[in-house]
Length: 347
Ligand code: NAD
Ligand code: DAU
Image 1 (cartoon, rainbow, N blue to C red):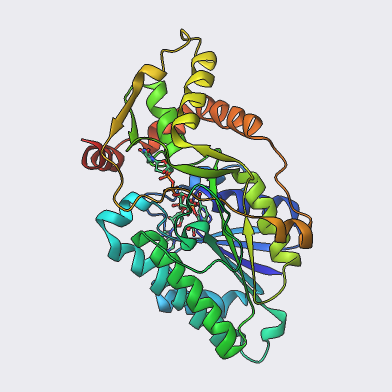
Image 2 (cartoon, rainbow, N blue to C red):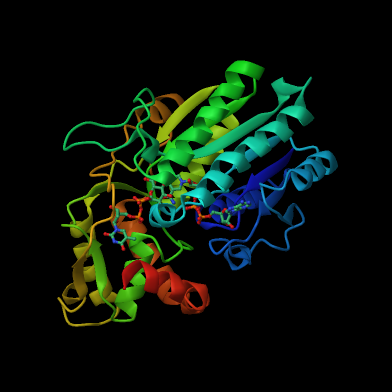
């Protein structure tokens, strides 16, 4: 099989590329990525020379480029992760999210449909989506696959829109798709604009930890390698025209998670107990901040046998160690443009 993975130089994409390249030597994996601020080929140093791996630098908005690679490589399947992914950036620049997440996805759909027509039953387009499309939960309940869409941020609205286009292509053109909606990932290679890597980096550098609002917002956290395992399973065994929710069964209030991180980091850095907690600073809330996300992952568990393989304690431990052992990666991604972003977001 020739498989196109989009966004493979990003956080989750790089773990998916690595898993497919190392596990399926008989496949050829093509990684298409525009290398935006979030894309980083250093994430894939260990597999870049593998004979079954090819990197294609390009933008999913570039229709001619997409047509040319589909014509050249005759892809059997697409795993689509390329996206603008940070909620705070979507609040300051919504159009960038419409362009990549909506128009870029429709571009890929059109070229796939056009290239694959007459042979659709042997193809698969797998769209990676998010639990944020379902909106916000109160203190109780879970998102299931039939929860109505109710997105609140420009990011989640753009992801919801792309999900709708994919379903619509399934209904209208019998397009062979599968979608998964996953909760918050964490782990190695996570860009330090998101809560966990941002706070790890700030603790290392003794910088304030900017907790939005009162910190009583809840997220369900999943180790990124467990998401990659789920993606592998759904790509191979998921049913066409189905959606599967993926989650960690692991809800944390932000402030509790931040305090846990502080305690673990104090130990790892041999600092006095309580020193990192002193860095916690409550700052202006995120506009439209969703109170709580929680995934009911029963369907993927019952139908495909998937469940998280690491506990949160194990996952966080591995994650912190990775950042402490990869200071060069962290320094490279936090120089230049990152400083400007940080200034405008937090100062
Ligand atoms: P990321 O921001 O780390 O990586 C996105 C990648 O896409 C980058 O490598 C970037 O260069 C590339 N990209 C962006 N725009 C592009 C374009 N126009 N053309 C080609 N490439 C482009 O994102 P992530 O956190 O790894 O998320 C990957 C996917 O998973 C996204 O679709 C996101 O919505 C979804 N998702 C993320 C999470 C999470 O917690 N991070 C949870 C559920 C779903
Ligand atoms: O739920 C899945 C989604 O999880 C993915 O679709 C997104 O791509 C991913 O970015 C993530 O979205 P969140 O907005 O939940 O993640 P983030 O790490 O930005 O924020 C997690 C929580 O922490 C949220 O309640 C906001 C809060 N927060 C975040 C930052 C960056 C802070 O309190 N301070 C911060 O500086």
